[in-house]
Image (cartoon, rainbow, N blue to C red; front, side, top):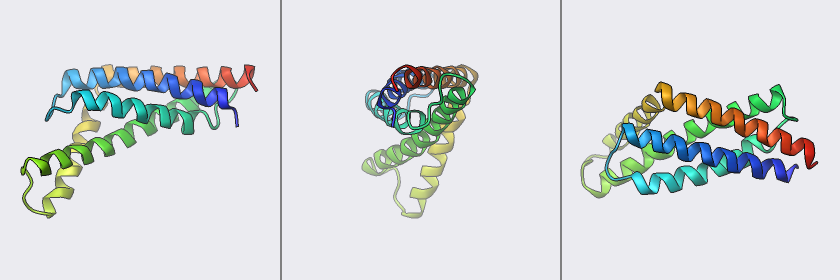
Length: 146
């Protein structure tokens, strides 16, 4: 259990998540979720970096790069699901959704809309590069502080 690798992976993926959130909100501003989205994605990025990247970081080579890419991909998927749930809750609060069957449809639409924006080239490059840097940083921390 390399704790330094988990910490470095979590911090670097948090920074990546915050930058990707900044780019995401420049493209899509919906229902006043800006300030809270930074906080939620920052916490989520740290947790995914801690669990996914830090648990098996390699030693700074190709395994570390794959670990970082896995963490970045996992972050995008979990963040999309949470974003969809959150926007549905906001729509329910404002009575935009009136029937129970529309909850699942609205969640699916919002999650797909989030993922559609997340695969735009500038955001995708930021997530890939940030994931690689997170993996290599965690791998180097694993190498030097084991």
